[in-house]
Image 1 (cartoon, rainbow, N blue to C red):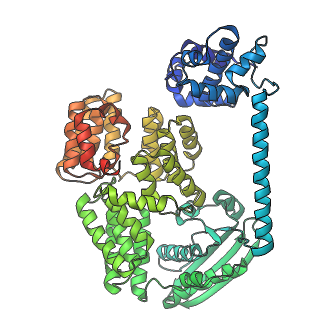
Image 2: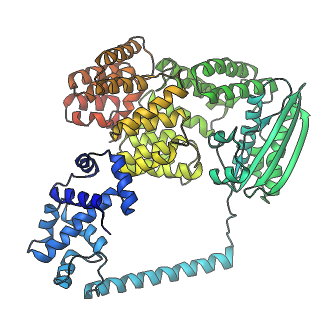
Length: 623
């Protein structure tokens, strides 16, 4: 049954048949709607995407032209806005089940109709026969291999079990010991993650349930896990009491344990909980897995206590929390100079604080982080997290594309992506490898589906792939769930901006201002300037640009010159754009890693100044 709105869309498409660039953006403009409104309305009426509807309209017209004119398929393809005859043939064959030539031959007296059934041509019969022969041979080979494997070697792989460790409750009678509870939770999570048969939800993904009233079945369903571990911690007079329970997703209690010990024996409690969980789940631990479970991060309990306090503060992600965490990490390292995790925690605060958030001066931050990482590497040269953090710095701070390319290639082919993929995914995107970025992102999501911000990154990758509708659908799904996650809000603001859903972008920024009033890195000031310009508030624009300029002059991080350049590029003042891009280069700002793929810079790519900067930044070293 047709609908007036869909009829209107079909007519608009027919009016632009010969324009191959006519798509969702142009259609929404003709309708007087936003793209997201167009997406939603078409989806609700037809159950199909806008692009599908546009393509279907073109194909219906193609069928009519095939039957009622003498035009060749190639002529029809260009007349109807298809980019090439081969692409037209592919779309037509998929839609009608036959090629354009076969359609004309068999259906000259019939009106265009989707799914028209016809007997296969002789050439089609041969193709079907060949396919069946190949399929039969493949099945035969598969059957033989299966028989050999099952009958001779029995290489059955144990089924993977998914589990989440909820943050333990603090039952300490006097002091607030939430940091200690977090440390217990994260230590047990890390021990269990070392068991190959277990798929453990990341600590980031369970944070949202720290103070939730949801039931165990609801939490398990949200996290997509088979089992939940929950517990409580009581610390009093250097005595520790820990209770823990292993609960099935259907709320069936499998096991419960209680441990009472001195604080100095806390590592033994971590080990016992992990071993008991493995035993209850009938998992036989290998020697390597036992080694991971029984490994102590440090023998100095005072250093460990300082470390878990610092880790808790780092997780709060604010300038004030970072400033409190820094001396705690430093004291832990003084007490134990071989405490690798303390080096890593401290280096990560410097690295993160020196990039887009604008907390520490860029090169000072990287100098301190690199020194810490190299010391940690001397202690444990096999630690993958150290290698990851070093390459994080090589890419963002040093623009060492050659080193990053080698690291990227070594990680790309690994089938199992763990949490250490952020810079790998970002590098793929910023060097134009969108499909590889999507592959990394999807593997990341399958491994840690409840980590909030990776869904916003997926929307961003889809945007670069030209799949704007899918990108908007992802954001629509997660917006209400993640109103209080800074990373998600930042990335979704960017995606909405580039898809030209400006009101949605403004809405995300408003949430940031409400939930994170103390956070104001250059990227947010840039958004303020752009939207002030769009709203005709010229005085505000001047103030925002002045604020960014002052940040640049005082060598603040967060890439202020880069964002000033993007502002001028947005208003098409390209001379000022290049002036500020050069300033960004002179200060070696980390956001210049976006130079190759930044959408606003696309009109400048043929300019010699663009090409010169492209080479100087280092992109040409990996071409």
